[in-house]
Length: 291
Image (cartoon, rainbow, N blue to C red):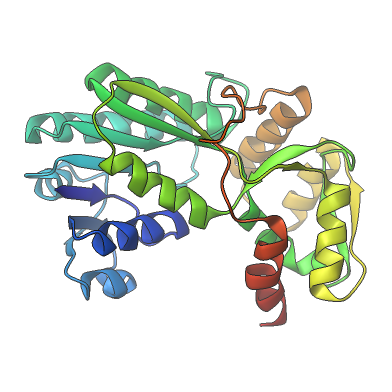
């Protein structure tokens, strides 16, 4: 079978690409910079150079494909929701014209809400575009990425993680390697109409438990400090992050606090994935902190 991945440079797309190649499938990837996907093309994948905003690039990549994995690039900009919708519609049109039968959409917990959840609400509309255009669509809704802790490296060096979330509030957390594996699984599964699949990691954990695990993995005390949304906004402003990005992130964290980011899909054997936070902390976060 022939598959297309539109975001092979990232953690999820790269894992999915190698899983598909391991299984002997034909693969095309879309990348602005082919040098960044040489590990994939060296194994026989084709690369179409260009942007997902270019209809010609999409048409070339989708030609002859059985299924497409679509991850909305996190190109945060003013009017992100409108951009995400327009880009998804362009992709849906190109895939339909190419005769693609299945779309696998990377979404998120919280995407059941069409507004109020920052960038996640934009993905709600992306889901709807593909669901309306194709009969066979798998919507993957992963939980909070463990890799998000890599953004905390500057404060982790001082033994602190700041977050608006409560120290004792449990929430699901998943490693991107497991999401990539789920993508490959969804692309190659038998046809099954419209499906929503949660991806929830091995178990829900609290920041209290996460900091204990990090303390063990890093060999130093780590604590969690809960901050207000206003303090979060101030910290992002102080870092020079554009206001429209800050607005999206603060809105999303507000959705977490309201419970709007709770998974719509209940935890099950299908949604539970193997990589523990202990493994992630030792294999990914600790080495990154030392580099």
